Image 1 (tube, rainbow, N blue to C red):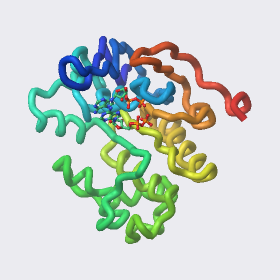
Image 2: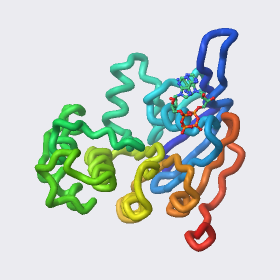
Image 3: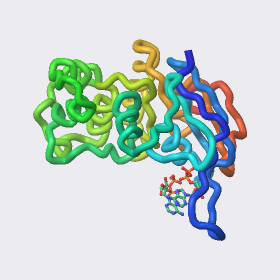
Length: 232
Ligand code: ADP
Ligand code: ADP
C-alpha cells in the first residue's frame, strides 16, 4: 500500500510583500517499504518538504496523507498526537535529551504517546542498532555515530509508518555514516519500514531505492538510486 502521499503541497514563508515560496506544488506518492533519498541544492525546499510531510510544519496549500490518513489535524494537539503515533524523525544533530540515559531516551516516545513503557521492547530496538550494552550511558558518553543510532532506535520504537531523516549522516564520519545508512536499509528490507531521507551525499543516496530531486520548491526528478559502484 501507500505510506505517504502529497497532493499539491505549497509552503510559503513570510508576510505579504516579503514572501518565499519554499514548496511550489509538490505531489508525490511513496509506497510502504520504500527508501527514498531527497536531494537538491541548498534552499530548494528539502527540509520544508520533510517537515510538511512529517507534520512538523503545515502546508500553506495542499494535502498530506500518511498511511491513508490525512495529516490535517484541526488543532496543534491533534497534529502532535498524529506525529507521535505515526511518524519517526531523525535530525542531523541527533537531538537526544542530554540528561536522560540511552534507554530513557528510547522509552520516551512510548511515554509521550501514552503507551505502555515497555523497556524490553526499547532494549530490543537498542540491541538491533548495536547498543544493547550502552543502556545506562548518557548521550555525552557516546560517539556521534552511536548517538545517531540511539536516535534511530528512539524513532523506531513506536513503529512509525514513516521514518524521516533530515541529513541524518550530515555530521558523521564516513564509517559511522555507513553504519547508520546500513541500519536504515535493514529497517526497510527486514521490517518493511518506509524511510525518507534528505541528503547532500550521493554515497548516502545510493543506499536508498530511489532519489527525488528538488529545485526551486518543485520535484524535477524521481529515479532509481545510483548503485554504490556508480558513486564510488
Ligand atoms: P540547509 O540548506 O542545509 O537546509 P539552511 O541553513 O538553508 O540549511 O536552513 C536550515 C533551516 O533554517 C531550514 O530548514 C529552515 O527551517 C530555516 N531557515 C532557512 N532559511 C530561513 C529563513 N530565510 N528564515 C528563517 N528560517 C530559515
Ligand atoms: P533546503 O532544505 O533544500 O535547503 P529549505 O526547505 O530549508 O531548503 O528552504 C527552502 C526555502 O525556504 C529557502 O529559500 C529558505 O530560505 C526558505 N525558508 C525555509 N524555512 C524558512 C522559514 N522558517 N522562514 C522563512 N523562509 C524559510
